[in-house]
Every structure is written in C-alpha cells, then in structure tokens.
Length: 210
Image (cartoon, rainbow, N blue to C red; front, top):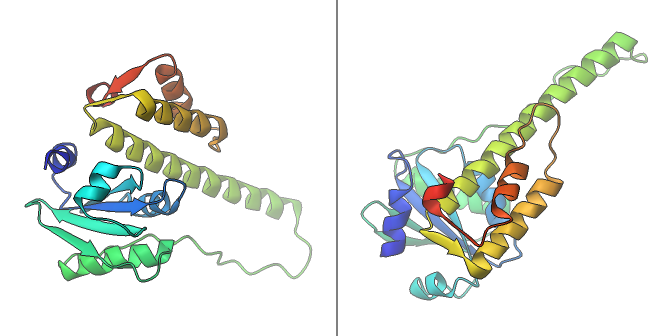
C-alpha cells in the first residue's frame, strides 16, 4: 500500500520490521512503548489511533489495543496482546523479534549500590548525593527529549502534507510539550522553537520537517 511504502521510505536501512500499534486516542500506552523501544535499531513502532478509520478499516482492527507488524516484503502479521500493559506489549514485541532471530535488549535503570550510612549524613555526603541525583536527572531528561524528538521527526517526516484538523492537533500537542516538558539546565529549547515555528502556519510538509 502507499502507506507502507511511505513508512519504509522514511526509515533507516537497519529497520527490519514496522509495528502499527492501534489504540484509543486518549491512551498513552503506545507512546510509552515507543519511548521504551526507540533505541532498538531493527524495528520502528507507529501509533495509530481508533479515529484513523482508513488504517483501522484496512487492517480490520476492531479491538483495541492491537498490533500489526510488517516486514520489508510487506508481509503482515497480527500479534496477540494477552496483557494490555506497557510490560505486556513490550514482551509481545520482544517475543516476535526473538522468533525472527533478533534479541531486544532494554537498558535497566541503574540501582543504588551504596548502603545507607548508619549515622546522619555529613555535608560533603549530601553535596555528593545531590550532584549524582542531578546528573542522573539530566541524563534521563536528555534521553527522554531525544526519544520524543525522534518520534516526532519520524512521524511528521513520513507525511506528505499535514493540514486542517490534523495540523491543529499537532500544534496543540506541541504547545503542551513546549509548556510542560521538564526541561532543566543543559537541555535544548527544541520543543519551544518547534512550536513557535508551526504556530503561525496553516500546514507543514514532511520534507520541511526533516
């Protein structure tokens, strides 16, 4: 289909499988899964909401959430979601990739290794702890920002043109991201500048966004 051709045209050669994750418009599950798996080079995930009648009808999706996966030969497979949670969906994707001979390894969050001091902390201990916490926070936020940026750039660049209600939805989304994204020192102003760039426009093309 044209949709699938557009998908493959916009992704890296390393991507072997594209997953369409169908869900309700107000659900955040798909976004969470995309953020968790955005560093996996062999796959890409696209979120498709129930109100996308064209795709839901084409793939006969009536129950949500649902997953369809496509390879570069446009062979499609419907995957069963037994546990509709973040962990459950990720496990379904990992199991599918494993069946194709590819392991999906997720980075585990760092666990504290230092035991709690028996006595009250000294001033130097508090300062050291604050530095460590701040560094972890900044690294986490930078990684989260990169994930959201990657998702936005990939989704928009695959569209020939975005206008009308779809473009308004994009502007509303960027307004929320620009206002509430937890930026701290050292993080870029990417979302704010992006929102300022699109807010006065009536449409945007995928080419302009690359």
